[in-house]
Amino acid sequence: MGTQALIRFEDVEKVFQVRRKAGRLRRERHEVRAVDGISFEVPRGEMVGYIGPNGAGKSTSVKMLTGILMPSAGRVTVAGIDPSRERLRLARRIGVVFGQRTTLWWDLPLRDSYELVRRMYRVPDARYRANLDRCVELLDLADLLDVPVRQLSLGQRMRGDIAAALLPDPEVLYLDEPTIGLDVISKAKVRDFLREVNAEHGTTVLLTTHDLTDIEQLCRRVMVIDHGRLVYDGGLAGLHAIGDSERVLVVDFDRELPPVEVDGVRSVRVEGPRQWLRFPASASAAPLVARLAARYPLVDLSVREPAIEDVIGRMCAGSQGL
Ligand SMILES: Nc1ncnc2c1ncn2[C@@H]1O[C@H](COP(=O)(O)OP(=O)(O)OP(=O)(O)O)[C@@H](O)[C@H]1O
Image (cartoon, protein in one colour):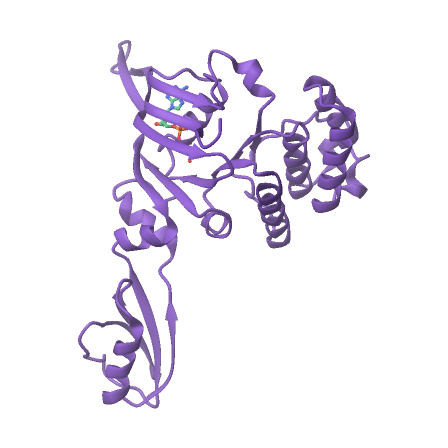
């Protein structure tokens, strides 16, 4: 494959025909364009965020990548394979983790689930043992191997699921909400592990999440989907730039003052001697601070970056929140 893209979407569409009630007896046929002409390429080894509001078309895209759904138009290729035509051949090369449901066997201890994965995917012994050892160590699974999956906490189960997906050494890992419902420590563990797997094995990762900290900590590239279309594909910094976002300067004066009037900032909140001043994220803070300090008795200040949720919310205006 060389430098060729590992994942490729070419003008992909997915249209669902749904019937909905239109009166007491009548049913109307109606189309839902879940994916409405998306194209992108992901090179081998990249970690990409695939985000957007509810109903944007993310899960439908991932289902086409795994071969569960066939596109209505366009072409999907993963590792040179058409997923819907050769789903089983592809299954050995991709790992899938859904935060909301497990792919493990509910009544079996983790160890037995892993043994089944080994047999199903015919993972060679030495590789299986090396992968299992690494997962057990990095995901802290040693004490959990003999516990039936149904007795695991959500965070433990999620770590167990991620290990199962990685045992066959997949080239691509699709993660759907891998940190949903996890506490801060478990989230950090999962993120550290994913970073390590990506760095050491060059595993390509497509990450769908509503927790944008996952994206900020793991992905240099992010794709934003809205109403079945790709509305942004690039770095996080660029997202801030086109989102036309604002930063906030929180300033403390030596006494209570009326809202400040300085070019380039807007006072949006006053609380005693503290004021919140908005300014464009693309502007440099230093000259603003200099202007403020020249006219006002400044004691302290800090700059708050725009929340990425707000940036994407504005980009997908009219949609539900993330
Ligand atoms: N099998 C189906 N039949 C009919 N409509 C569907 C089907 N699957 C998805 N849809 C519709 O397609 C659109 C995209 O859904 P999808 O599940 O891909 O969104 P999503 O981005 O994953 O959302 P979420 O963040 O809520 O998981 C929605 O309007 C959804 O109702």
